[in-house]
Amino acid sequence: NAKKRGRNRVVIYDDSMESANRERLQLENDLRRAVELDQLLLHYQPQVDALDGRVTGAESLVRWNHPKQGLIPPFKWIPIAEEMGLIEDVGEWVLRRACADLVELRAQGHSLPKVSVNVSALQFHDEFVATVSSALQDSGLPPESLEVELTEGIMVSNQESVVSMVQNLKDLGIRLSIDDFGTGYSSLSYLTRFPLDELKIDRSFVLGLAKGSQDVELVRAIIAMAKSLGLEIVVEGVERMEDLEFFLGQGVSVIQGFLFSQPVPLTQLSPLLAPEHFLRQLQRLQGSQTK
Ligand code: C2E
Ligand code: MG
Ligand code: MG
Ligand code: MG
Image (cartoon, rainbow, N blue to C red; front, side, top):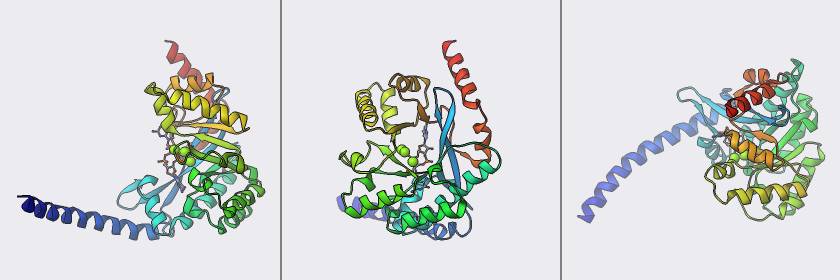
């Protein structure tokens, strides 16, 4: 019976494996040409200071417009691009497009202080600094208008090469942010070893607040630590007014979350940059809350 079940399972497994493999192979094939076929695009999510509604920046978030499957979110293909050694091409495309987009926005008269770009640990090689420098030069974007989001996976490495690379990046004049803070490795020593400007509190902590878990204490500690290190703080994934109020109560006001806006294509970003857009949205949110 066990043998029979085993054999059946093997057969079923084989079938689904085969189709999964086929899909994966197809995706890999398609991904290989996605950059040259111009199928990648960037969405932007504004970061808003809830004290005055000012937009402090926007994060670029890559999407793949697959000819058959439509927009594919990054979690479904960035890891594949990393495995395939394609992440450097994707990353360079993102960097150049984000710089060019901000220059273009400003040329149209919109004001946006900075754009941030995600960087994969596998993209973080020697050539990366030169790529950033070249993207800045070719676009004409002032370095202080570009922010690079590093992850704990990059920073946790004590290698001198990583430390000096991050310093070289900083020396270009760009801003450095630490993304998804608190979700990766537990070593905190890197926070003082690297010249960081900003810390992003991960969405998972905000979700914890809703459940009334001990995350509240953890978030308070993270905020206190970030402040004492002189880091600016951005909270990711704020969807509810209660969560915004919690952070305001902790003296943290810069928010990136669906409460203000989902990530949107560039053409839909510019109206959000109009003066007072988010101030009015805040007033509406507060109004509907007291009702
Ligand atoms: P991330 O860098 O932490 O980006 C924030 C993610 O949280 C985005 O998902 C954003 O849409 C989502 N988010 C923001 N606010 C809310 C909210 O209030 N509620 C909910 N439910 N979600 C919210 P997205 O765009 O799917 O990106 C996921 C991850 O993919 C990013 O996480 C980043 O790690 C990676 N990624 C995106 N673009 C790039 C890129 O250009 N290069 C690399 N290497 N990775 C990228
Ligand atoms: Mg990010
Ligand atoms: Mg993040
Ligand atoms: Mg995150």
